[in-house]
Length: 355
Image (cartoon, rainbow, N blue to C red):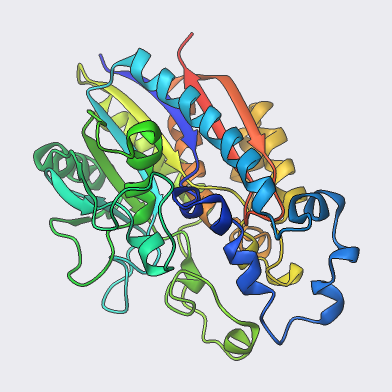
C-alpha cells in the first residue's frame, strides 16, 4: 500500500534574485500612469507595506523576507527528506509557457524524463542577477520518469479526468517556472543542482480567464480596460477532486509519494481592486484559517469569481493538494503564512503527514 506526504510551498520567482530586485514588481507597477496618484502615495499604504518599503524601496526588508522564506523552505525539505519519497508529484501553474493560444487544457501531466533546464530564465529576462552569484547560463537537471507520468495520466483518465499530457516542452518557451522553482527552492542551498528525487509535474491552468488575455502575467491597466477574457480555468472544487484522484491512482502501489502544492497565495499584480499594488491579505487569511482548522468545505465552497477577485489564481495548486491530503487521510503537522505587501504575495508553507 502506498504512503503519502503532503507539502506546500512558494515558487516566488524574485526569491531567485538579489535583495535589490525583490520588490521590482511593485516598482514597475508604480510606474503605471493609470493608477491614481493617491493609491501610489506611501503615506496612505497599510502599516506593513510602509514598513517593508522603508526609505530604500524595499531593499532592506527583502533580506528579512528572504530569511523567512528560506527557513520555511528548509523545513519543507527536511520533511521531504525524512519521508524518503520514490517520487514527488508537483501541482504548479502554467503562465503562458506550455499553455498558449494553440491549446489551453485545465490540467496537464508533464511526462518527461530527465531534462536539463536553464535555472535562471526568469531572472535573466528581467536583467537581474541571481541570488547565488552563478553564471547566467547555469542549468540544472530535473529528474523525471516518463513511464511513471504516462501511467498517472492513464489512471486519471480512467478515473474520469480528461487529462492532457505532454511529452515535450514547447519550443521557444520557458520551462514552466512553477515546476523549475520547486526544485530550485527545495534545494535552495545548492541552487537546485543536488535535488535527488524524480518529479511528476501536473501543470494547472490557474490563470483561467487571464491565461491568454494577460499571457499569465503582469498587465498595465490601459491594457486590460478592453481585454477579451478567456474561459475560466478549472473550478476550485474540480481541483480538490483531482488531488483525490491522484491519491487513488497511487493507493494500490507500494510507492512513497510526496505531493507538493507550489505557489504563493494572493498575487498583487492580479488584484485589480487594489490597483495591483498589494495582495488581498484578508482573503488569504480567510482560507488560511480554514486550512489550519481543517475546514475543507470552506475551500470547496470557494467560487472561481472569488479566486479572481482576490488574485488567488495560483492557489488552485493548493486546492489540488488539499483534496489529496483529505483522500490520503493526512493531518496538518505544521504550517506558516508569511505575509507581505511589498513582495507581491503572501506565502504559505505546510507539511501534512499520516498519524
